[in-house]
Image (cartoon, rainbow over all chains, first blue to last red; front, side):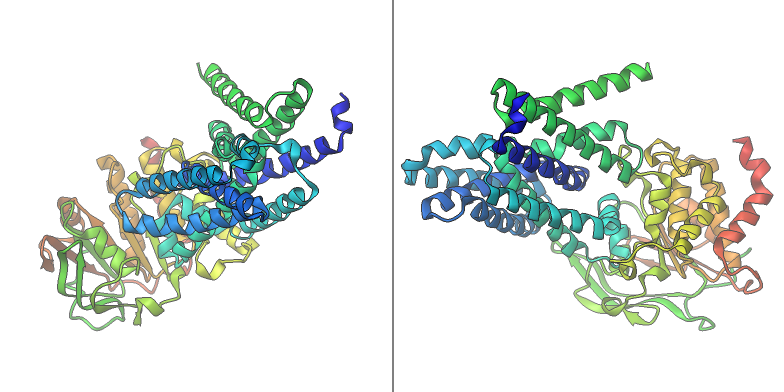
Amino acid sequence: MDIFAFEFFQRALAGGLLIGFMAPLVGMFVVLRRLSMIGDTLAHVSIAGVALGFLTGAYPLMIGLLFAILAAFAIEKLRRAFRSYAELSIAVLLSFGIALASVLFTLGRGFNMNVTEYLFGSILTLSAGDLGLVAAVTAAVALFVLVLYKELFLLTFDEDAAGVGGLPARGLNIALTVTTALVVSVAIKIVGALLVSALLTIPVACSLAVGKGFRQTMWIAVLYAEAAVAAGLTVSGIWNLAPGGTIVLLLIALLLATLSIKRGFKI
Amino acid sequence: MDGKGSGAGMDCHDCVISIEDMSFRYEGVDVFEGFNFRVLQRDFVGVAGSNGAGKTTLLKLIVGLLKPQKGRILLFGRPVQEFRDWERIGYVPQRLALNPLFPATVREVVRSGLFSRKKMFRRLTAEDHRKCEEAMQALGIADLADRRIGKLSGGQQQRVFLARSLVNNPDLLILDEPMNGIDAETQEAFFHMLNHLHQRHNITFLMVSHDIDLLRTHLGGEPKMRFGKLNFYIRHSHELEDCGEENLTHTLRDWRGRREPQARAH
């Protein structure tokens, strides 16, 4: 398998493995707080940022990242405005993101080529600079989760108890959403905006079926994601398939296999 | 074991919770208006009321999760907003709010009782871990430590949450509908366990429940106070201080030692 000799493939693999590491770490909290759709929303707003980046000649991934962070704050604000319809804030922002992106993309017709790249991912075009950004974000996310693991666990498990313990629930919520925004905006490069929430949620769905404790479930989710990324990138490299789609299809295959094996053992 | 009169009005003990002329409106409805209430040290207060009577709102106001529009709330003599000693408060949540598929072991849940603001950015110490193991042993859930909490029975889950609330040796224990979804026999055992703690330790209890009969049975006859649709039952305990054991979990272990034959029977 000579694809491993290519530098672009090595970069893709490194970037993919970094994202495969941090996406489930954050995904664990996102899924268990019933916010699975947040990944999609942040991704769609992030895409608008990417479009703006292209339009203005700025570094698209960075503008996408800023947009995702802004969206994270907007979700928190809107969530308070529509207290009893938390999902409404997500729906509004999701539409806003994709609407803005489509307008911006058509404003600068010249870069139509890049639209699919960001909608469906283009990990094989990962530059050294991109890889650096992914590595920096991974370090920040890992640090955040490790340092605040206890507090994030309690916030996720029992928000009221976190409040009674005097934890700054609002601050932690915002920090978690911003961290999710970071993950999503760089993960767009690998699986694309349309599939990004798959990396956050499906590994967690797999590990929820097997893990007992929280810590254990979190690390099993990372294993699932890394396995799917490594295998998916290799397979797509060899047969020239879409890398993002291949990874997500593999994850879903893993989920189905996990569930049926588990059921098989039970009966 | 009989109540020795109302806690309110007796000043032999310090005020644990004091609510002064509080008003709280939520979505245009006056939930509380000009509400005054005091909980003294070593009171066992039961708040009964139907759904929507404001029980949970009251708890949230007391722990500062909601802010009253008027009046003030003091915890251990300090305004809630300035209160920092959160580890003095143990909290037992509504068990039914638990997502049965949540991936957390019994040990992880009990440990989370230690995660207060003061522990932020800090690692748990060996002493912390020891406290958790002791709390689990005291409540007879040590052998379940590595099980997923969602797989346990209602009564076992309740013990897990009680163990969590006790790891810090709290001065105030707040219980939100602790008896929901638990069969009568287990409820009885659970209440006995609470009574035992109440008699032997310097703990103040605040429990809300929709089950008026339950509170009436355990806290005695008539409510000491009514406010709107809420009934306040108060029992005060004076015996004590002679328990000898400082550590809560030790007392519970003795208590379980005596009851174990009975407990095994279920």
